[in-house]
Length: 220
Image (cartoon, rainbow, N blue to C red; front, top):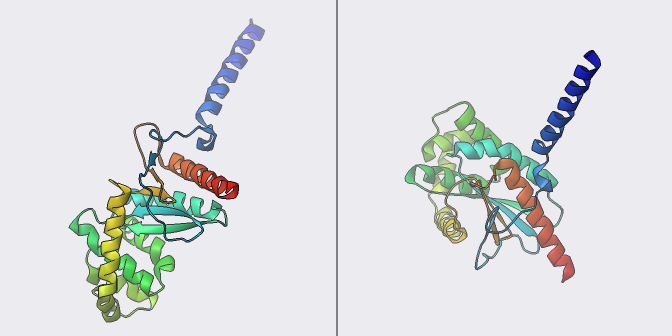
């Protein structure tokens, strides 16, 4: 009787383990379909990365989902091949988001964007610091060696206004409706959807599309 019970338990454990393995199967093993898992952008949008495959994230510092997505972005960036380049594009979906996009381009112009990026996300979403205006952001970036008055002067410049306008045009051209969204080589839009695409799948799809674009380049 005990032997029979042990046999039944062992069988149940094997079945359970099999289901667990199915659920734990990495997103990369799935087959990704255009129109279901990602969207074709037609016509494609010219990229800013020359001969390299562009992997672009549309995001906002104001977006809590983008803060949660950042570890996945870091993972993606670390795994990109040498023929691909990651680019960030701030979205402005409402007036409250505008200072963050303006601050992004201003920090970029001073060469302090990369070293301050994670810190700003943490300050807003982890530490809940009241960083809402361009003055607030100027004070924040002062810790990175840029005087507040210089930051504000540049933030209001014609150059930054032009970058804001161009960025807004790009977001519209991509058809982006929410953040975070990934755009691969100006041709494919990847975001969370109702077909089972969540953050891990977004990364897997982007990697799949980069590989597809790489293969296309080699075939030419």
